[in-house]
Structures are given as C-alpha cells and as structure tokens.
Length: 152
Ligand code: FES
Ligand code: FES
Image (tube, rainbow, N blue to C red; front, side, top):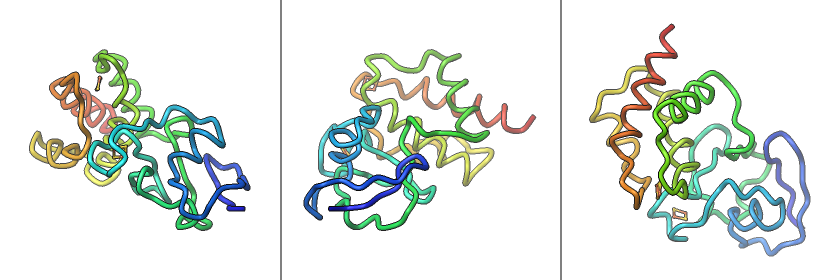
C-alpha cells in the first residue's frame, strides 16, 4: 500500500512501490487529464507538480513522492493557472489536445519563475514538451498573453 496526496486529498492505493506515479494518477485515482506519451521522460505529456515543481510522472515511482503535494491539471488553482488557462482558451491553442495538459503545467511553472519571459526563455522552458500537432507558435503567444495578464 502506498499513501499519497493529490490535489489536496489523501489517498492510499494498493500498488507496487515502483509503479509509475502516472499510472496511479490515471488508473487508481481516475484523474485522466494527465497523459501518457512516451513513458521515458521525453515528451512532457505526463507533467504534474510535486510541491509546485514540474515533474515527469511517467518515470517517477509512486513510493518516491512521500508526503509531497501532487498537483495535476484537474487541481490547478492560483493566478498563474488562471492566466494560462484563459490565454490558452483565447488563443485556441490545442489542436488534438493530447499534449496540452503537460504544456499548461510547464507554462505555469515558467511564469511562476519568470514573469516576463522572452521568446528564448519560453522556448527553453517548453523544450521538453513535445506537440505532434506543432502548436508551438500559439503556445508561445499564449504564454506572452498570460504574462501580460499577470502584470495587471
Ligand atoms: S509520458 Fe512522461 S515524458 Fe512522455
Ligand atoms: S495539440 Fe496535438 S499533440 Fe499537441
């Protein structure tokens, strides 16, 4: 049995210690907003926050998170999350949508660290999030929009 806290709620799940956190989030807890893409920390689709820091849940053993606060796309809150989600909607960023929860998580993490990112800052921060629909131009524009909204 492994205990973990996701989106403010404590859970105990009957899984092996080395089960990827992503499987627990999706299969045991039913939070399917976080996606499986590559399974080897190369695409970013599975990004969640652990104590506010982005992490690839596909390569994170569930037993390693301990008492940390895990936040998934379903549990987002706060001004950065609101600004990013509003900008994503206004820019109509997603195409198929599969990568987008990971993109949103990484964008929020960037804006928490850097309130006025340059194009290069954005490209570097989002480099680990792959979009097979190539929505990168809209992602970059939406991050700039969200940064401007956070200035107000
Ligand atoms: S599924 Fe985790 S990085 Fe691709
Ligand atoms: S919107 Fe389709 S993979 Fe990114």
